[in-house]
Length: 250
Image (cartoon, rainbow, N blue to C red; front, side):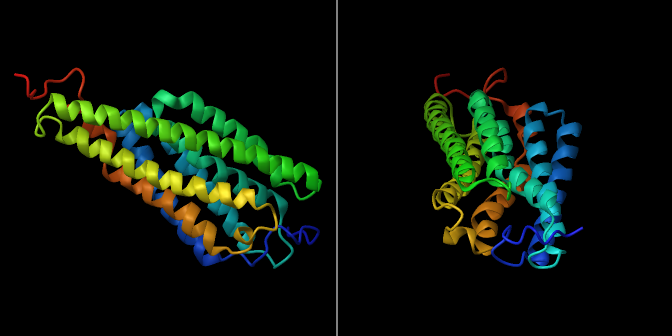
């Protein structure tokens, strides 16, 4: 039931069309990722599956908010949407940067805690500001680990290109390019979130619905199908370690 006590949850009327589109798109990708993870036995992709379902459930909650009367929004859908959409990319990143999973876990926990503080309409202004600072810290941690991972991947990329022929590592290069592309998309999203929370509740970024869809939802929506298309199961047959490659030294 809608509750008119919480009139300040949104500075605009949430769009049902946009919420429904992203719910459907994330849902399809999530189901495909689950099927691929089970069929190809790629346990490393489980965090990505979880993150995709987080996005799906988050936008289902957005649909519920969009279906309610303006200014009379229910609190639970708003809170669930805010937290799941905030932390989903950190969960997704954990499947990409497995060696830095501790950083992604830390980022997830920090953002979850901060997000729960920010999303409470009954919280005091000081509590909301503290929550925003905590969310910012979590986002900065995620960006830092993402940049570090990209640097390490770049060093690895350079070394295998020197050690092996292009034909021998073609699949690995395609996989690395996928990682680079997805990390760029996740970083774009994180930078937007940092800017959004840096400005506080009165930030203009909080007052326009199209901005989160353009700079938060869309980059993640591009990243998930990219992994559906270039799935790591292909690496099982051509992994750089444990499988023969054509070395330039031979």
